[in-house]
Length: 299
Image 1 (tube, rainbow, N blue to C red):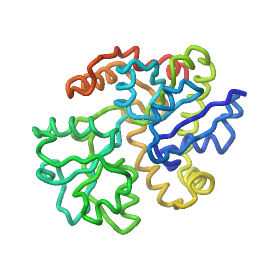
Image 2: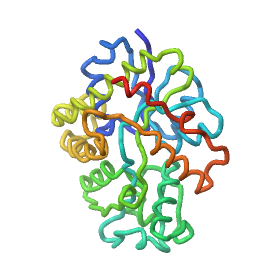
Image 3: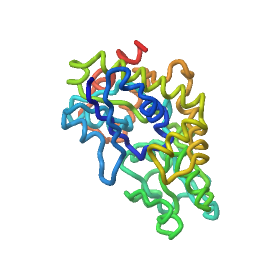
Image 4: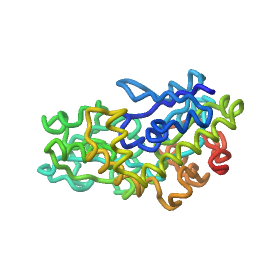
């Protein structure tokens, strides 16, 4: 039995329903993997976990992984849960903000993983970051918006807007992928060492993970119940189900349910080019340094 840690980049909610479903059913153990699922906590940087070079896989954003590779760290993507990023920006309905142009001169809160997304989206709209006030903020988005500390806030379009509505604060959402930010997200990454030493284990891990995702989408009610009963008790089954159903299009993308997790070198090159063009990296890694499709192609 191989002990493997999975570091999430958020709470164990429906964003990871496939992983949680497979874990609950014991599928990882049946595949010879003793999987520990580690939820995100304040100040957790999942790339830092990889740099420790222990037995970790992580869920992360593609741009954070590319920046780590550019800094010389031997880490690599082996699959991607989402074919398109769910990064977007939400604002309270009464704010009247329905486009990036409406944000001119106003206050936007973002997280480190969203710096590239807003730069790309603004450029595609003929705008500059100087056209608005951009602040790095935490994740207490309800307070930040309802207390008028921000006019808009970065979000995962399938999650926080639903949580806001459930809390009685309906929002309007601007989707990043509608504005040209079409990148992989919830990327599954690990170290070059683990890739070299444990290729069979990683193949099994990916197979179980994406079998779990297919099962979760087939049975949204049951998978949402498992999320709430076993991993996120302070949520509700209905909210998690809404999230899960909203996520299916960005998980399937153009590849469909049978090829969940698939990645193309061309799209990774586009992500690298984004970071180069926005001067967010100085050393330019090759696509092969950043990702491998060797494992996902086997399943």
